[in-house]
Length: 346
Ligand code: PMV
Image 1 (cartoon, rainbow, N blue to C red):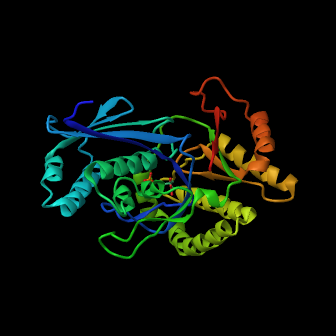
Image 2: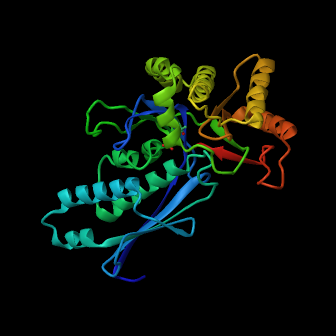
Image 3: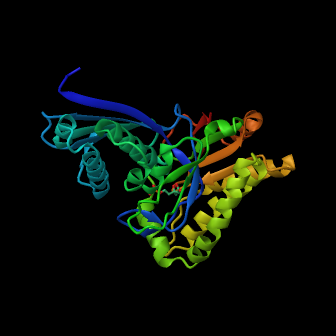
């Protein structure tokens, strides 16, 4: 309403990787040791919502996350702001009206509608949303997923819907390490995900520190990096052909390998809990009695599971999950699957 304040609001969904990003070759630019591939969830479920405002009356850049003011001095946020302003400046030099906006400070207000930092890709949605909103505010167009990458690696994949590949790239400056859409969400209308919230507590080792220690100490990691390209090619083919059993099998093997290299890290990192492992056993039991791979699980840097399955199997799988893990009223009770979110990818 204030004519001197320009404001942009947008939302960005979470993405859950089926080929995992775990390890960097460049900590500052955030360049990965291997490509990764994810599915972006629906806009209405797990998402970040961010407003960015610029005004000549603002005296400094400021940031609020879920209603609480945070320091804006984190190098990642600073890198993102610097890069957006650099590109805006390059594009706009000579255009005096917009040059004025470039000198203005920004206020950023962001909220998640799900637990932050519980291994539910909150930083991915958050940085994707921030970069998209800033891009709109400053008139930066074209590829911006490489800017989101500098906020949180996996964030680059949340700028696209559907099935998204984060290409490693080969340039030292990281300019070709960005996301590309493999298939839009409409390509596989039957695909669904179920998020099983085992715990909404903060993860015990952050992904930045975790992957750093894995790269430094895990011998298995070297072997893993050699395997990822082949797996990425195979799952891309399965997605293109809508071959669910192959998609599901690779997804589970990838998740298991991520947690194997975490265990091989010294000191070891445990993201999965007993409840997580019970979910793994339940999924394999369902697949065994079905005589066919019907469901896949995948776990990130936390105990919560994401299940991928086809629409026709949702009622049966959901009732089995609810039978073995009756929803608890207390979300703080981490020993049970406490909340279920049916997220429709369409
Ligand atoms: O982008 P980060 O630093 O939050 O790392 C995410 C790593 C995993 O979620 C575990 C895997 C992935 O590819 O999203």
